[in-house]
Image (cartoon, rainbow, N blue to C red; front, side):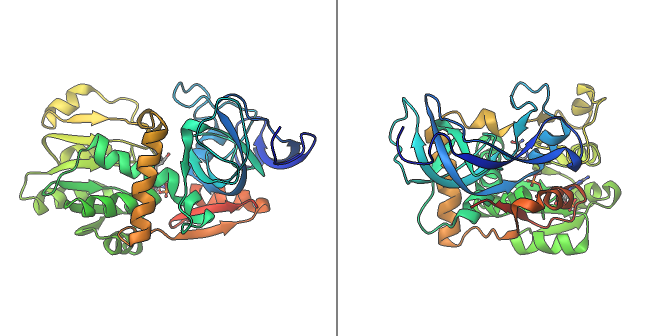
Length: 339
Ligand SMILES: NC(=O)c1ccc[n+]([C@@H]2O[C@H](COP(=O)([O-])OP(=O)(O)OC[C@H]3O[C@@H](n4cnc5c(N)ncnc54)[C@H](OP(=O)(O)O)[C@@H]3O)[C@@H](O)[C@H]2O)c1
C-alpha cells in the first residue's frame, strides 16, 4: 500500500444495479477499489457526462464486445483527477500526477481504478473540469479527422449535429486542417454555434433538405466525407450528399440505428464507403492516448480550439444531467463535480 486512502475507507459512487431510465441511478457508499496489475487509483475531481453514460444506463452495451461494461456497475467513462495509488507493473506514472482518461468506467465516484493504457497526463494550465470535458470528445474528433477520414487541405466535409460536443470540435479541427466545412443542426440558434466554431455553411436538417443544399453548394459533386452521429434520421440523406467513392463516417446513432440497411444502397449512391468506427479501437496504447490528448490540450492552450464547459452538476444532480442530454437541452459539454 502506498499513500492515498486507508484500505478500510469508503467512497461515494453513482451506480446502476439494472438497466433503465434515470430512476435506476443509485447513490451509494462502497469500498474504495484496489488497483490491480497495470492499473492506478485516481482521486476523481470531475467526471464528464456523456451520451455513453445514458446508453450504458439504458443497457445499450449489455452485449457489446467493444464495451465490456455490464450492470451492476459504477457509471462514468471519462474523468480527470490525481493518481493516489499505483498498482503492480505500472511504469512511468507517479503519485500526485494529474491525469485524464476515457473508455474506462467508474468515474462517477470519489475514486476510480483506471488502466495505465487509458491515462493521459494533463498540463498544469488545463483545469480539471476542462480536462474531464474534452478528453473523450476531443480524442474522438481527433481520430475521426486524422485516422478515419484522413482529411487534407482542400477537402470538403459535412458535420451533422455540429453544435454538439464532438460536432463543435470536429468543425474546428477540420477547419484547422484546411478543409471546407458544411454543418447541420436542429435550429437556427444551434446553426449559429456551428458558424461560430468556423463552419463555412451551417444549415438546419429540415427533413433531409440539407442534402440538396449541400449538392448545390458543391456544384453537384457532394462532399468528400460526412461525419454522421445522428443515424436513422439523416444517414440515407448523408449518402445523397457524398461524392462518388466518398466516405460516410457513422460514428453515433443519437436518433436510432437503421436496421434495414442494404449494402446495395451504397453502390447506388456512388460506390460509397461506410464505416461505424469506435474510439476504443483507435486507442491502441498509452502513446496513442497521449498523442490524441496532446493535440487537444495543445490547441486549447494556443487558442486554436475553443471548448467551454457548458454546465457543472453536483453529485446530487446526475438525474438532471442525464435528462438534459436525453431531452436535447444540453448545449455543449457538462461535467459532474466530484471533489
Ligand atoms: N464512435 C465513437 O468513437 C464515439 C465516441 C464518442 C461519442 N460517440 C457518439 O457520438 C454521438 C454524439 O456525442 P456527443 O458527445 O457529441 O453528444 P452531444 O454533445 O450531446 O451532441 C449530440 C447532438 O446530437 C443531436 N441530436 C440529433 N438527434 C438527437 C436526438 N434524438 N437526441 C439527442 N440529440 C440529438 C443534437 O443536436 P441537434 O439538436 O442540433 O440535432 C445534439 O447536439 C453520441 O451518439 C455518442 O455516443 C461516438
